Every structure is written in structure tokens, then in C-alpha cells.
Length: 165
Image 1 (tube, rainbow, N blue to C red):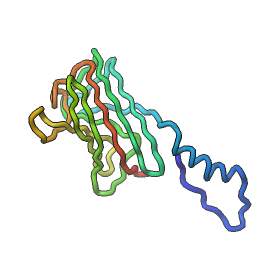
Image 2 (image 1 turned 180 degrees about the vertical axis):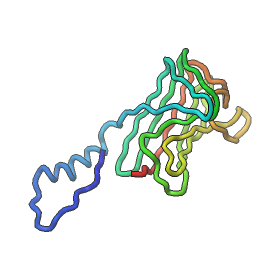
Image 3 (image 1 turned 30 degrees about the vertical axis):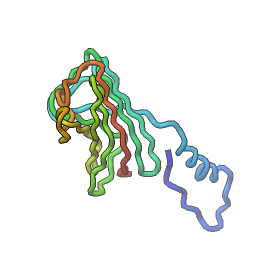
Image 4 (image 1 turned 90 degrees about the vertical axis):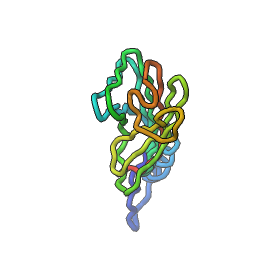
């Protein structure tokens, strides 16, 4: 992961270790593997429970730019709770006065195309999908919107945003 660059001092003797830390290591971190994390799955109502499903996240942070991917696969013992769903981000978003929009796909018999939104200073993201197969208006992903969720359904969320720090 990239770090804050060093402040150089006039007359300082530059060593190989300094150059490696300030240039080579930081440059290499931009090409490293993404970092795994486990996002929390929450709702505005009764909490869902993952059960034997899987929920994984991955991200790459370069400076304050964060690219992320969240993947949820529901299992036979997953319970869906009630209300609007949200998923934790790997880092808090900057408070820049605008929302970030990423992609969301729900594979539930058919593929539903949606978006996910990150509000200013948010620590989570919420996926939105059309409310049914004949409209283009969007609603929060819920246990029964856009379809009734069941074992084996998969949610994929991706995006890019500016981190708070």
C-alpha cells in the first residue's frame, strides 16, 4: 500500500534503503495483489445472517483512491432479514459533498443490473436495482426487491471512490 512520501532535507545523504522505500516499494505496491477484507452485511431493519453463504471483499488503495469489489453468495442457511441492505467499505469515504456510484449485479435466476452508492463520509455502500423487470426506477436491494432472494443467489458490487485518509 502506498504511504505518505518522505520530506527530503537539503544536504541529506540518500541511501539505497531510502530510495527503495520511497520509490521502488511504493511503485511496486501499485502492482501488488489486492487486499482481502470481510465486509459486514447490514440492513435498516432486522439484520440478515450469512449462515453457510460466503461474503468476501477485496480492495486496492493507491493514495486516497480506493477500488473495491464485494461478492456475496447466499447459502441454504442464509437468512435475509428485513429492510434496505448495505455493505461495509474497506475505508471511510471522503466528505467531498458528492456521492460515488459503482456497479452492482444480482444473479438470481436472471441477471439484474444495478448500481451502488457511496454517500459523502460514508463507511458503507448500498446497492440499488430496478424494482421489477418492467421499470427503470431503482430501489434499495431488499430481501424481496427486485426478486425474493434464495440460496445460491450472487451479488457483485464494484466501484472506485476517494477515501477520507
